[in-house]
Length: 460
Image (tube, rainbow, N blue to C red; front, side, top):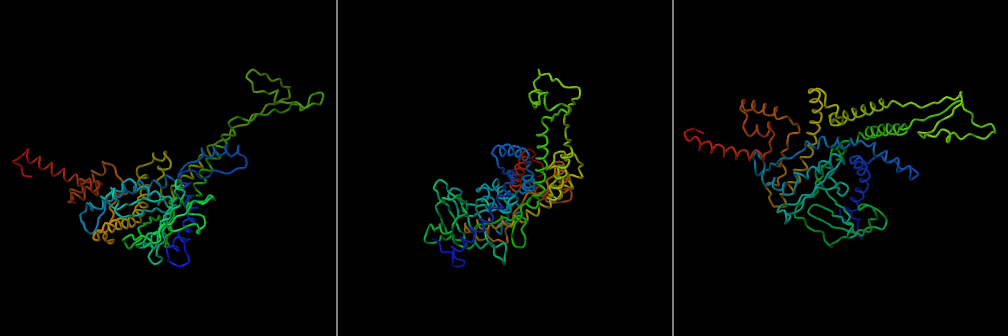
């Protein structure tokens, strides 16, 4: 049994964060359903109707939410770090080594995608891992991790919590991070079906009598918040536009419903008797059989009628209008959402990209602070106080605006003619990463030595 009555005690923080995480997961799961394209499946009464209609709903899904998230995420690529110990424009090699050892060149996209789509992303920084030889940095799911910020300083984390379920051992685990402390709690998986964050607080117990000391004075759980407000609450990229996304899928579903109902035209016959001479009702289902060899005998007054097809083009145009609205309000270029928009003018495409570049630049600014905090924590775990200095940390990003090779090399030649330093041209104009430029410098030196050997009388 955990005592949660004393304010700011580990038990008090555990109960507080567990409740907040459990309450937040409903909205997070809803956003995840949109991001995965599984939203909108209705629940109907009969099993047959449910299965048939769900199949139709599955065909009607158009996952625009994923495109809205992926458009800025594809342009968010860290390529290096600068610290107080290394003022070189190429960045700090030790910081990049930590980044590479943790496979964050690939896994950082997990954090960015979670932040952009689900409001929050997280990483947890741990001590030096024996296998990596560097501090461990792990991307985390926002349905398992939560933090609470200082109301006076939104960037300062007071406490962090990670909760997950071990199905094999039949145990739920909770790791509570406080400044300089790590408290571990556990419970048996409840018999009533609940998630790892739900259930009675009284079922939890501490794994150890004393909390572990982390050796650093900060909480090593770093939040990545998308579009934070003054209170630090995040908003997903497509979250304000759920109505437009629902409208697009509903319009597509309506078109499929009409097409399905009109797969076979409705036929009718008018001007025929309903009973024979003896007064018995006539069964026209047997008379008008749809057999290729059947012959129908009709009275002179009979008239056959066949339903016409409804024009689906207005519904298709309505879907295109909704997609254009989504592109406008989310600042996503229309050619991302609609392939036929790629045939527009070059000037129009450049203007459409401009909004995306501005949006991505803003997300990069927000994300930079979190990655700087994570890297500062990693160096603090290593005992490198010089590189851990938070004020001197800086993330180097690949430019969010991408140009063609012809455009870049044309600009590079003009920049060199204007006297711009070679390394600046390589990084800022030609958009090579600092690591690529380092290799290029070595190759340039090798080429210069080779040229000197081949032309000994020339001055290099």
